[in-house]
Image (cartoon, rainbow, N blue to C red):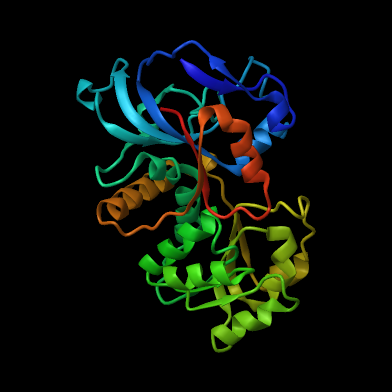
Length: 328
């Protein structure tokens, strides 16, 4: 099968190879998916760059956890009726070396989720890490109906979905965005107000949007960099659900201040979510897709041969939306 892989860490253009690899077989409890698309996420790029030094101990890695396609074969203990089913997949390259940057992937049947007929394969490649992370951030710590939620980076891959999940749950949303195009997009998704997180003291603007009421839940894309402003606008007993801290990789926490506010900091990553949380996210995603309730933002689709370009796009600071690889 055609696939992309790397067997050394480094820059995308230097280490990613595209060629022929052995087609996998579906083992017990697994399905073999003929992939149409593969989603590229920041965690994929970090793995390739060397964030996990032991990743290559078992040999070359076919990257990416998310994708979509059609089940071609099933292993033992999987119903034959699943053959021919359109699916989106997630966690394909978690704790193993064979991901979705290929024509085929074999993986746990529970990680291959039925993709409604009204949903394209390119959208299916965006549902694993972006949509599930956003869902967990919104729903992990109780009902948000009528609560004020702040979504930083509202036009980003996760923030885009977080605004929508929050609105579906009945929350009132403030988002951050740094340009007029992204601001308009956040408003269109349902945000009541949008502030520019590049302006000093932007937390004051957040409170202006809420009429002075403090935020009870924050969905945070840059935890370390944004924490000082967050602490100015979050309520006592509030929750910060964060999935990234790229600019400040080792944040320092003002412990006493946060303790006396009885704040909760929740770290979110799809791979380690409880199975019950994954099932809840998958169920809500399916319902939303069937009812055309979710909007999606795909920045670029590239062929498998251009995978290095896809990784470079994810590393670009100005990118908005998901990057999808055509594996068909």
